Length: 240
Image 1 (cartoon, rainbow, N blue to C red):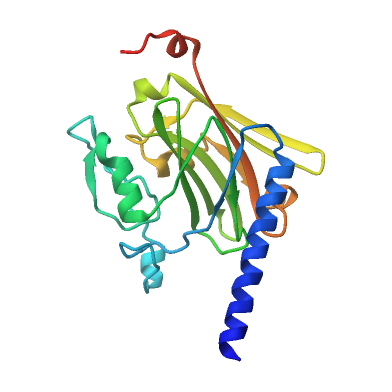
Image 2 (cartoon, rainbow, N blue to C red):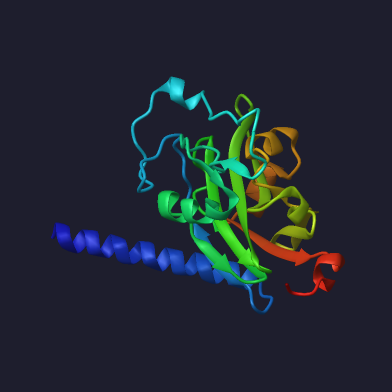
């Protein structure tokens, strides 16, 4: 009986995820858009397999600080903001680190839909995915964080896994679209050599207060359409 109950629960979860996938595709109906369902990561400390481990309240208030001095301009720390990960390495191996250590998925295509689940979870919490297109990898970070006590906000930004000069060659667009309402943020991505925490603190990203996020969410999930384009200069450069 217990086995049947567990199996039935798993089937219901699968049906729910497929329904969420269908709704996101219906909202963002442009051809070629892929939907990726992203689950939250709500602990500051994670084991290498991505499972949460026990933490104290002191841990929760002590976010990983960004390095103030980077001696090698190509050296970066782990770009996962809420992980207690001390890894540092060259830009060329950041993607493999994110995939192997933090199990972050990669979605390919010029336009995708990022479907973040469980928006109701208490802050801080992150939703992360890598986006591969135009010959580069990008990291999308959606964070729920209390800007002021008792007032959570959502911050979404796109980071290029590359240098700041390379990042200047692209433009990204984030779009929320629900119930005949549309909200769009368009900007140049930041390099992962910058600190994600500092980008969020400065508000140089898409910022939603709780009521606005609720307006665009559906049953606790938030669908964000993502499109990345190359600048005209980048598009005209011949392949090396």
